[in-house]
Length: 390
Image (cartoon, rainbow, N blue to C red; front, side, top):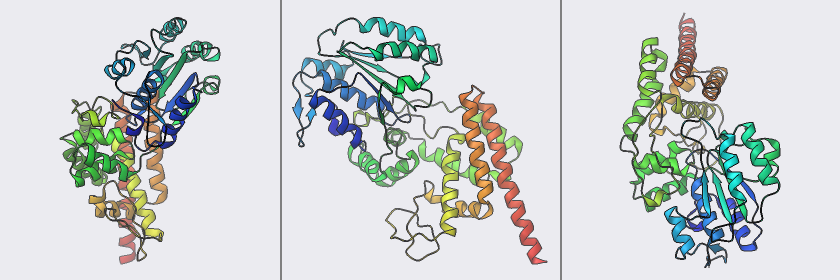
């Protein structure tokens, strides 16, 4: 059974929840906020198990852990504990409706089946509309003493201030890369070089790294995405449309990562679409450009691509470290203003998706804007070079 000691890179959240269990001062409502695959479900399930465990054990620090062997823990591990209830959106709905929350509110008044508490884990809580949040508010304002409500959310921007003020908000942090690599190599048996690539690409999201490590197509997709973006300035409109047809949206079968990757969500999306890779690629472009302009003192670490114009400059960790020469050429051609416009286009793409714009339409607009910025910058650079030659 998973325990608090299995939580990686979220020490503050772990300590807060363990202290709550130890002291008995368990809040009636929590928000666990973080990106998909960051481990919210994993942590919520451990917390729920620890609350209901009838024979808690102590770790090396004297903090409580679920025993894993009492009836409550066995049921929790099997997903059948009657006092741990999951609240999910209806399959045909984009978000959690008010009817779902009202049904939960009606159930809250029923006493726990066997345990000391009754725990509700609300998935995709950020998708609750205003009506649903107001219905939830009536419960978290005056909850029964035994009720604990855990909201799992990708972010807190869409929550009403009244809901936020009545919950303990715990923000998931990016997991340091060395911990991600260690987890992949030691727990999943991933080859070190591949583990490093997966960790780089996952940007501190442990579950995503575990999925990538289990995805046999990851290496090929990563190379293909890098090839496309490295040459985007030369792409025709037909090339961009073809990329959209192939990559938007990406739908792939899951490749199971095993029990050791319990912090990962069920499905394995690989790298996602080209649009999902754009922020990573142009983050590297920006880092490379800053490294060319600004010497950063320090000592480079093994396995980190060193960028900088001063001897001994600190290594800037590039996600696409194997494409450093292509990143440098693009960074040299693009101005900071052009890179800023590309980031604006990426932000606009995300806003369009949030508003319900079709993914293929939004992605084509994004790729066209990026192509135009790169092409324009490269043409300007060539003109400047020709002018100097004359």
